[in-house]
Length: 510
Image (cartoon, rainbow, N blue to C red):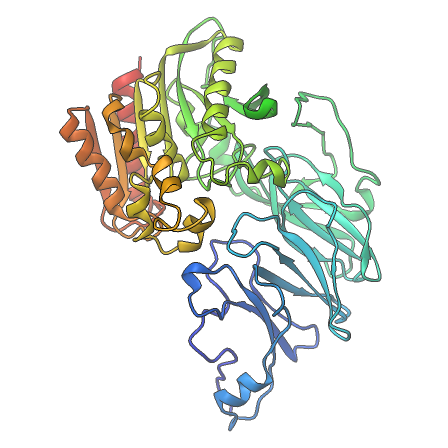
């Protein structure tokens, strides 16, 4: 007779909440043990301290929760920052996992760590690799790990060869698009991974490991300061589910560019042209500000803020990976901490200036700024600091940072980004709060917010809309009673795109 057994007793999320990506639990190769991530701190709302726990699988039917807990081992207790995504090596000797080092900071660098199951020793395999390790997979021989990591608007696949607990320098295998969901066939001969690009949603690709480059390729086609275009003949699409739909759609390639931004550092931007593009014509601009703030844009497909769809009705789309964006080193990411409206705002304005000066087809008199989450905060900030845009779309953005602190479920985020609480560092919250600059608000604004948004409460959107109405600024609010921080339901998404595009058309369209 079979029976169910709770292997993670106690009032904790196990595994932890995740927005996608690799699993936060794994079985040992012999099936006798599970390793999972869980946060056991008293107040998870102010903690990023996910630890990894191991527990045997086979308990007798009479085992109590206390006995299960007694057999559970916290193998990463000494690290007070996040530890996630455990994966056993096929030979059972190791557990590889990703870890951060700074407690309370969700955007610290994700390192790849190797845990020796016998000795308990831990080795950082990517100490000198200044990028975030994302999803990864073991080769069947347990001597190579393949992973994806963001790099300059793309997410290449990399390989890391192991010699005992030591690793070689990561080698870049694939440059195109955003890659992930990596696996290897049981014979170790074929790499399987997902890929999406600016022109196509996720598909499954394969590559013969014997045909992979021995060294990271350096190619010159369409190269900028960041972007390296490499022809890849070894990556072969396995799925073709979207071919028939995409064959009937006209889409443009991603056009990357580099410019000098804040701190005299080179910053990367991207441009997408409309279908049937004519270089002799002038086009209005949709200026997209990404969220996170540590969530970059680039050669990727998204259903919620799709650059090709924004360009489709006759617009040039411009995106900037401002200071704070991953893919350019941890120092570049950390620059946004405590400086939300400083270097990032400077990058955005200088990036748009560069595009206006170097792309003659841009109509700089017809530009609209759009953003969500941090991007929503930024367009609110922009509204209080410049009138260069003819319209704004503010989705789920902070309006009053002091009020937001009391309603978000991610207190650790505010406390890190603004270096304290509103009562220990009120000056920082007020310095970057858009609501204190409302006397400068003049730009027609569409406000979008969901009732079920617990990251940035709906009251932030209502407060912004009410203020705009009282100021007499042309404004409209799109309210979703059944959506959270993201608009995910298909019919709601259709309404979202129509409302957003209609608003932009009204103020800067043909």
